[in-house]
Image 1 (cartoon, rainbow, N blue to C red):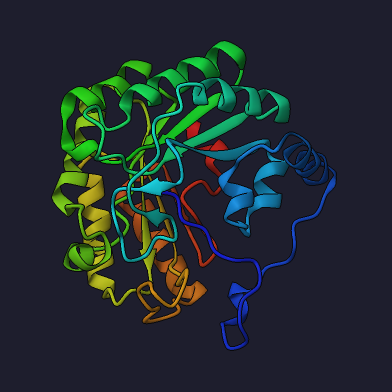
Image 2 (tube, helix red, strand yellow; image 1 turned 30 degrees about the horizontal axis):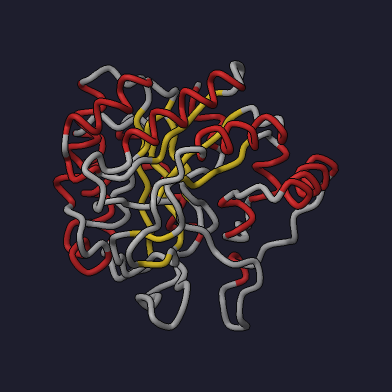
Length: 289
């Protein structure tokens, strides 16, 4: 799942985590469209610090299947509970939003819907079809849940064949049970490996740092992702969404992020985005290359 951080940070956070408010003509135009048509993007609802940069590149992220998740991950600010019924008009709404905003590269993500027999995969494929029908020149990244590892549900994404398919491991093996409660580290790796085996051209995953992981554990996680033939990895700083969520154990320095980037490129990843403000969809438009 896509995670974002707030724009204004309390005093005491490292200076490298302070961000400027988004500016620029393209950002101003898109912000006006979002407000006018009441469009729902992760960029705005999460106050992502990279919003101005991404929108300037013609990229935006949309979340489908509602805003209530069936899982209760310790890092995520999305509400947990009993989700609402599926909105079968949602694919058209998302496709229309992308058209209105003239988005060149769209990232689609969702909450986990373990309450649905198909895991939400039917809405996923209908959304992809609607986007392609209405926006034939828009490229796509799908940031998918694990669908509980059920292949017939993953196969729907494979059939749609987005330019990039992403699934985040989020953290190192040791911390997975605490951070991702209902998820499994190896299941996520298996999903990523399966996607590649089924012919997906670009696969991608993301890791958050600052939860108490050790350097060698991050190296091992990156190695595990390469062993699953993942092409792209994003590495960013975890920030606590609220006092109810897992605390930040450490603020990782830009120098350490640079070290992980160097290691990742040496491992053979096509793209490595590693930095304090990096989030799953950061520079996503470049990952199709």
